[in-house]
Amino acid sequence: MKVLTQEITLDKTSVKLFIRREDLIHPFISGNKFRKLKYNLLKAKNENHTTILTFGGAFSNHIVATAFAGKESGFETIGVIRGEELSIKINENPTLKFAQECGMKFVFVTREDYRLKTSEKFISELKQNLGSFYLVPEGGTNEFAIKGCEEILSKEDSFYDFICCAIGTGGTISGLINSSKSHQKVLGFPSLKGDFLKEDICKFAKNNNWNLISDYHFGGYGKVSEELIVFINDFYKKNVIPLDPIYTGKMVFGVIDLIYKNYFPKNSKILLIHTGGIQGIKGMNIKLKNKNLQTIQIND
Ligand SMILES: *Cc1c(COP(=O)(O)O)cnc(C)c1O
Image 1 (cartoon, rainbow, N blue to C red):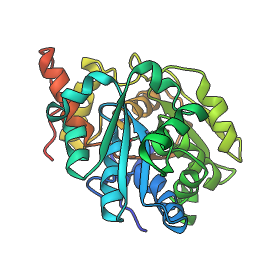
Image 2: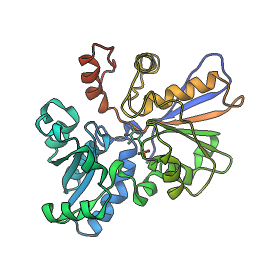
Image 3: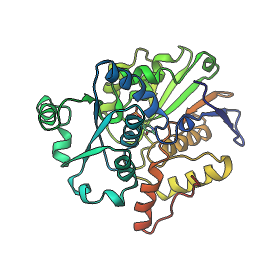
Image 4: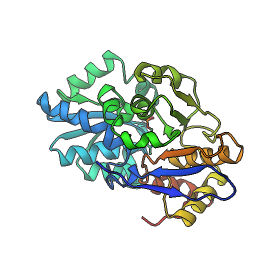
């Protein structure tokens, strides 16, 4: 699959910046979620499963992607959703509403129960209540997801010196690391606070040419600042490339900030991976409006 790469012009730097538009792969199964589901759906088909079960929060790109991909490939889908209070608010939540329209069924659980989601007891209770299913972990990350993410980079991409991506669970960066070349450096920008990521990435990553840059989470997962929103709107005006506020907006903000702090050597060629997530803008704008804050101005 050939995905569009665009150059982003920057003033007053010798660095060359490019962005790989994985967000254009599919309107609903966007970016890395497409990559992560590909081999999981194949495995589920090969094992004759009829139902896919997965996990996610209120605005999860992965929930939307699984709901839509499931419908397209003939699977029933079940989403275990973090937050019991959401069960009566589906119509106010564009992410859950869309997933439901794709036929996804929901199991709403408390935040405490959600934390147990990887325990055998929790999963066997789900099986007792719901029948058999193929389980895709939160964020879609497992060995089959990594295999799909390894396909983001191809031979020609050895041209780049740096490859940058946003991080949630670490699956995407693991795939990028595995298919990168030793002269390249892969930089990950976590969109959440926490030191656990490094260990998680080490489980899947086969090379050590990577680094985490933890200064651009903007307060944590799902948190945004006025400065970030202004940046996303400005970036859209200049480049007509939409960024999402949870992942790619923070990563691109971070890379450009580092460029002007001279983090990158002269004439470096940097590839940004646009992992998608544009569906999350609607939900974020509802939150911003409720707080009387500036919203994200992107035509979609
Ligand atoms: C899920 C997601 C990520 C995080 O990917 P991980 O593999 O979980 O690190 C990054 N960007 C976007 C747009 C996402 O939807």
